[in-house]
Length: 257
Ligand SMILES: Nc1ncnc2c1ncn2[C@@H]1O[C@H](COP(=O)(O)OP(=O)(O)OP(=O)(O)O)[C@@H](O)[C@H]1O
Ligand SMILES: [Mg+2]
Image (cartoon, rainbow, N blue to C red):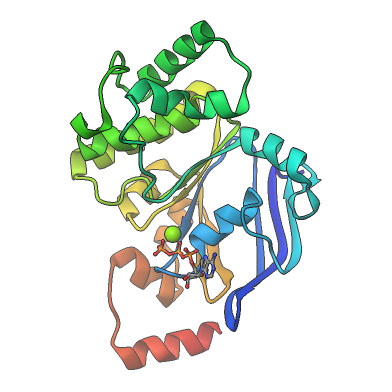
């Protein structure tokens, strides 16, 4: 049994069709990357997985349990097991780094102050920022903020981590740092991760497998090597960063519709 499974999932917002038959399986321990153009529904996929958005049709399974029929209590449990680093997630500026990282712990877990201190320190060490508990978010660089955001999610010790564009807006050094973190988290705490990214460097560095979303479905999935050798022109253009001429694009889209 796969840890995560989307079975023929459909989702629209009003007249706008986002998914029309999404099928995907992700195994325990994988580092799975989701690729796709802006607005294809990558963030929507992650949100459906943790029940923040409801699919119109189809099944979404986590560890054999149906997400689409979960009640509030089940969803709370699910979100402790599946942590999400939201796209563009901000820290609370009025709270210290410590309180930012402790936020989810206070919300979800009944821990005393000593346990919270230990967990915050552990999470900050894991993201390579030990000892910055007392700092204010406004004193951190963009890369540090991303890592504190990651510490906040990791502090809950989730089994699965969803990263929604974790390296967008970072310079190459911080991008590499976040990539290394994703990989080391994978190894250190045997976490399963799903990474949404536009950054091919990130995609090929961290992934065990990748999938590309286009027009409401997965048009290609496989290992980094299989992706590199893909003959699908949409995949090739995405990987190579080509912007095809409009007519070319129209015919490619028609072929894949
Ligand atoms: N709650 C919502 N209500 C209405 N429309 C929504 C909602 N959430 C997402 N959408 C729409 O669904 C489409 C897919 O959105 P989504 O955020 O998943 O794109 P994405 O693939 O993550 O794009 P990006 O790479 O730019 O982050 C977009 O057109 C978006 O406007
Ligand atoms: Mg998104």
